Image 1 (cartoon, rainbow, N blue to C red):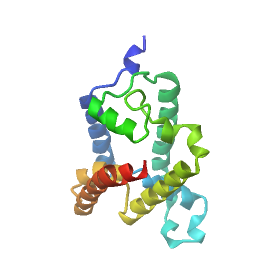
Image 2: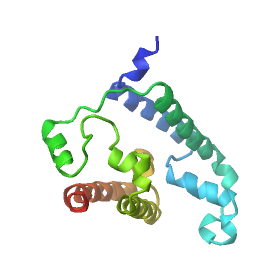
Image 3: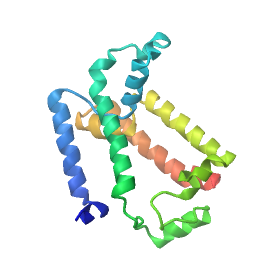
Length: 186
């Protein structure tokens, strides 16, 4: 009965849903971005006493925390009840390159076990990479004034030049990491 949920939905459905959400956000005068949820959560827990960055009316951003809660609940439901067992279709050349880098399950699963299994936390090298990567993502989101979802989805919709520049930087950074850093690390 719910078999359609386990199949990838068409790109145009997801695009239409994003457009509807952005229209509603623009209509209500709100902006979207996941990194702002962390700021709201930290402010709510009293971080404003230690840093001026967290001194703002977090209650006005409470709706954004509902978005975060929805992401967590949606992720739980998707992974436990409607997850597809099919892997993402990628080219054989990409699979060969990933296997050469040590990703033995490339082309067989959605997330590589090398990085996303519980064993990753027992490998000091992988753990260091995850911590360093998390720090760089957090620093980058703060330095850019928002995360990729905020700039690429909400900022570009509002025709904000800083978001356009940030998105170009995200793409250049992603290409650089993909072609030069990842092969060096693995």
